[in-house]
Image (cartoon, rainbow, N blue to C red; front, top):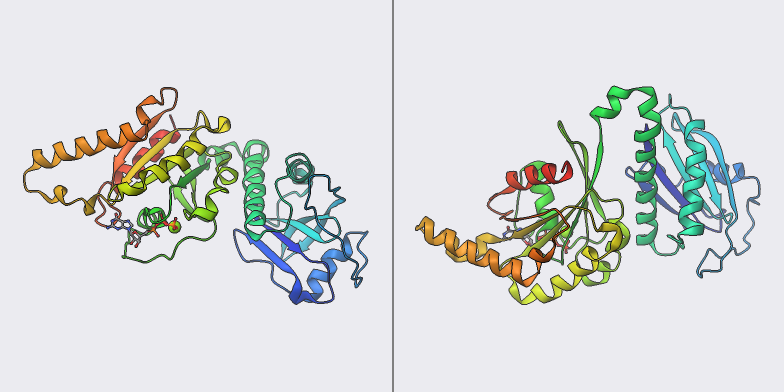
Length: 341
Ligand SMILES: Nc1nc2c(ncn2[C@@H]2O[C@H](COP(=O)(O)OP(=O)(O)OP(=O)(O)O)[C@@H](O)[C@H]2O)c(=O)[nH]1
Ligand SMILES: [Mg+2]
């Protein structure tokens, strides 16, 4: 089974400190001079020690030289690496008993497709590289689930399906807090600083298999990356802060970009109206008054965001308070329900 993906980037191999190393999901590859040198040396065209500048793609016409995959043993695991333009290495780590040959063809085709045809990564921005690695990881896991495990062990594959849950919404609505609440049951005010990169958390669920929650950074500068991260999602979760109606307009604009994207047209949508605890009326002792109030707010939100116009999409709306724990169970149940619908 695929354990990890890594990417090493740099021109000056004499100075390992100048290299950038990215790992996903775990920090397995570190800056060890000998190891990195050997990696590059294994890719035949690399001239170790040379400092010649090899610019990595920064325009659409850039040609890519792709070398590999080459097999290795790394930290007792089976590994395979591909070298791009002589200064980027992308590696795949498998369990020691896995058969590398079963992965190599797909690994090569996938890299080629992503960088040459789809131009997904120019290897410049860190954020872009991270998304790129995660994409490779998920695609390889899917391939493995559908082709390799299926053949090796039908039962295993059936028991461990993989679902991607795409959690988005503007900053401060409570996305990372929700994920922590679902995963650990805990909540603390101001626990998180704004998320700055894709935060991915896994939950192994008995019925649904492995749930991968992609918690998007909500601040303005990151929102343009949402579309990239949203691909292949099995469910979209859109979160709103119901106590902050001033930002509804801004929030709706971002939502529309995602839900109007054709590739996501059939993906079910769970809408969460969070921070309901901040709306005082819910504390009312009069149950029916409180219910009427919530119904009214819900109606206003559905109207404002045009949710009822989404006729083809399977969607659901839930109020929550991550702070008090209100409806957290219901959210988790709804996620599983929508995924399997
Ligand atoms: N009152 C109240 N506060 C909440 C609730 N959920 C989250 N918060 C608070 O809202 C703030 C933002 O929460 P985060 O979970 O960091 O929000 P986020 O959506 O991940 O923000 P970005 O990462 O910037 O996109 C924190 O101070 C939380 O403690 C809630 O249900 N009620
Ligand atoms: Mg966050």
